[in-house]
Image 1: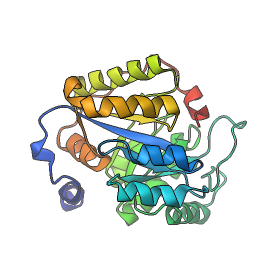
Image 2: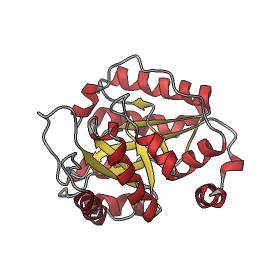
Image 3: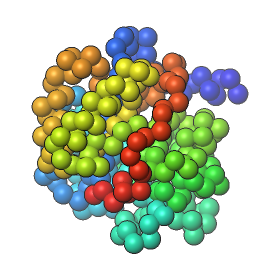
Length: 263
């Protein structure tokens, strides 16, 4: 059992000891429908993570481009939401799925997103609160040696807990950069991300390929020394958090449900 817990750290953490400043990871979600915006995200400075929706017209091409630009790729897996009115993405994981169907959806989705090193959820405010389904998911990820990022669209999510129980390297989102995609709010959320990283040692943000988000990041990422934080990939951040567990994040001041409507 001890060896099982240590091996993922040895694989994921070649640079853990070198970290000196607080670190942030940035994930750009919802890639796959529009090539121009997705390509712009894939070319952002530094190790920004690209999360690609499965079964989308440009998903495979954008995953290839992100990988060619040295970016880590995540499968942005659609999961059932509490909001039944939202449009369902291809391959969405549902509470109506059998164990076999659940595994098939994951395998098919992974096949459409090359170079994926792990998974984060698209929506999922219903599915991620169910321990049984999350254990199914973590067992599948564990078998494939993939990591997990909880997009944390509900405070009731048990996904991170189940990842820990199964032994899947995992973390969760702390900040949505562009729930309000106005430049002022993006700036404010980025600054909150930096404050959390300084408080806890690390923090994770999710953004989307909106023009305002991309423009802000294109300007801010080359100036991270001003914020006294380092941008790292999600593998490295998880390894750092595992070696130096952060305090439990404080509850967010803003509500979560609207974040599932972002596209």
